[in-house]
Image (cartoon, rainbow, N blue to C red; front, top):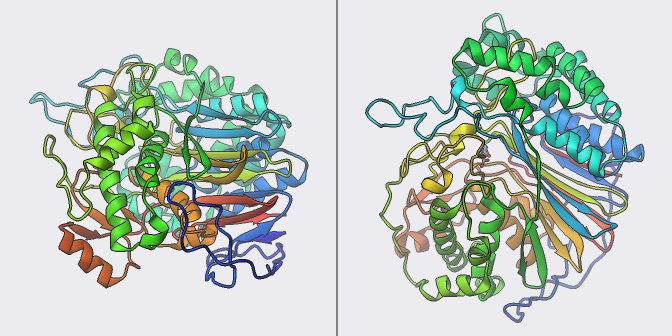
Length: 586
Ligand code: DON
């Protein structure tokens, strides 16, 4: 068994195998612009090395969940069985992001049919939600209402999504894939440094609710590293789900708990809302980039459309020749990002409610027209139609995981409670944390949400509507087969993180470890700042400043979980930005 060893991870029972890969041809420096040939890898040049396996691999943000996923694969489960087992396990082991009370997206590549399906289990606004529900009497956005109150909670989709995926593409019964998560919740596990830090940072919103404190606090303080976290109520809820299926959550005893919790605190979610929740299978958004096919999440995510839009804008340029993270390459990518995020604010929303010009946004012609009007020797100031504000939150509390099985099926899942531990509210005695996804709607045109994102009509609150997301679980296919399976948390930064993972892999021939470890940058049009991680050359920063960029050196962005398949060998890596993430394979 092959495992990625991280500082915080002590999985003594897992053996580490070293795989030595012989020398191969160096990266080709010059290539025709649009159709760059598949880059050859030279492991002798690499500083960071991925985990390598041949039969199956999982990459998640929590080593206990990775171990559960791998075990399912080894017992003969397919990638979807493992993904569903991981989905439940992360609700226990990564309570700040993994969830039953949130929602998300799953990309499933079925080897036999060659099809990729985009499963949408995003939260839906309750029937009583209304356009101006987050505004005060003066028409201003009432601070915190869409984040830390019962009004912040969208109707959760995760349990329905997991059940749907398992029934449709899995091979194991729900009782079997959920059992390891039940055991973990019942017996508990030791709180890691990362989880303790998250709990401490969220003390205020968690500490408001007795139901939440009963689980995550000890003697009035959040649990600390080294404490045992057992979640007996959550185990009981999952036992109900194992027995009755998703109906337990949407119609049965868990639904009662959620509705009671809402009624007590002026929340909107009713039993009808829960009973009416719908998972939707959607056609993925597709594009091509230098001979690869990019298959990603369509609306209500903005991610797939804008990753493809930006890749289209880059395709006519030789990034490889410009050099990785050179001022020239960063400028080209940043100016492209700005144009895509400006479009996001205008056009993107729930496709069941608003017409999204998906074809137009992802067409090569449109990208070419944007590039044609894009001077690269100087910076175009972000247009000032709508005011931008610095992002007030630095939460990184969504999670992504990737799975590939021995038959070549691949699954990419990004799901979330939105911010750290979501609304911070545990519903009654269910042990289930509820999301604050309603903040992803545009509370008022032009007023930024927690991620500084601006929107308008297309993403206004509406009953039954799904808030616009940036989550971008993505597959890159080569000759119709998965070549890269990736995704990330990071709110607005998810799109640019996934973009850079693809560019690092295709244009710069990086392996998943190198691609994840490279410093990242981000621009989202408004606020008009170029956000940079540490690790960039000071010389490059000077060049970028001289071009006119407002540079903001800010904390690390994104935490990718990537698996690459080359010549039937699996190469995977969990982003080093999260010390608890682990990739393992066999
Ligand atoms: O769906 C979205 O785009 C956001 N709710 C994701 C939030 C997120 O990634 C939080 N972590 N940074």
